[in-house]
Length: 109
Length: 117
Image (cartoon, rainbow over all chains, first blue to last red; front, top):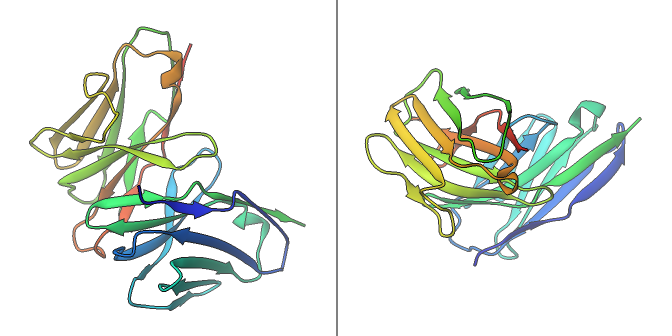
């Protein structure tokens, strides 16, 4: 089946940039997403990118999409302790949405 | 953005009992809602697609008689875990697509943590 893969852990120091990477296999994906999950909570949509774009910036967040390599990344500038959470990438093709396993971001003071 | 609310956020039940989880869209009408189950260190698993006024569409491997889904109105879908067993303990999350939002953009509930003793 189609897969979405992410590394499980990332640790950064407060103030540094965080880069969370994701690879996917479905070349027909129309949208790609980044969701944030804080402890005990549901998922919050952070940002999304249409598959014909290669970059999207939204305040501290920068999404890069390499469609040829099927690689998606999320960069968080000036990472804060409040950014500590699990970040899920997801892709959608028609109504079929697939998630990665999530990357746990730990921000150290 | 649109708001989706789940209730209860946590529930503990005895093995063999049934538990109902509600998913509500608070400020929009959702003809379609989705139910997921989250396993530790694993991705969300789509269980079923809940369609208002018709039967839910279940993913392969999900028992429809075990996980009953009812989408009785445009703002409410319920998931009932029947005859719960400890292996059903998990985090269940619902989502809905708000009309007018970017195609595919989903709004998620807070999740419901089920513990079966």
